[in-house]
Image (tube, rainbow, N blue to C red):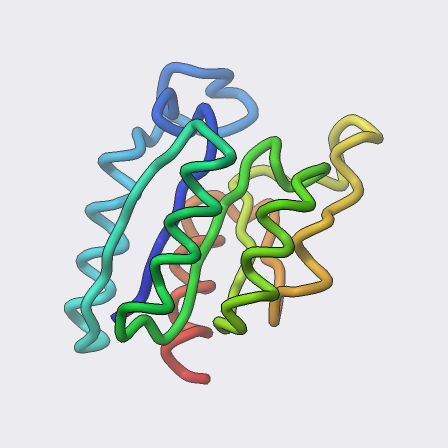
Length: 141
C-alpha cells in the first residue's frame, strides 16, 4: 500500500491559478493515480489536508500500517515545514516529493525545499506526470 498526501490548497486545483497549476481537478489527478495503481497492482490511500498538523499526524499513522512509500505534494509547506520534514524522517518511509509546477521557475522563496533532503527524490514541473512518475518510482524501489 502507498500513501499519497496532497497538501494545502490542492483541493482548489482546476480553479486556482490554472495558468500555473493546469486545469485538472484534484479528483482528476486522483483518478489518474488510481488507474496507474491498478495497472501496477498496488493499493493507494489518497488524502488531502490543508493543515500542517493533520499532515504530520497522517505521516505518523503510517507506523501502524503496511505503507511502503509516501508520495507527497506538500504545497506551500515544502518551503518551511520542519514539522513535516521531521515526521518523514522519523517514520523512515521512502518518500517522493512532487509538484505540478516547476518551483524553480517561480518566486525565489519556492526554490528551497526542506522536504527534499529527507525524500528519495523530487519531481517538479511535469504537471500530472510529476505524480505518475513519482508513484512509478516508489513502486519500483
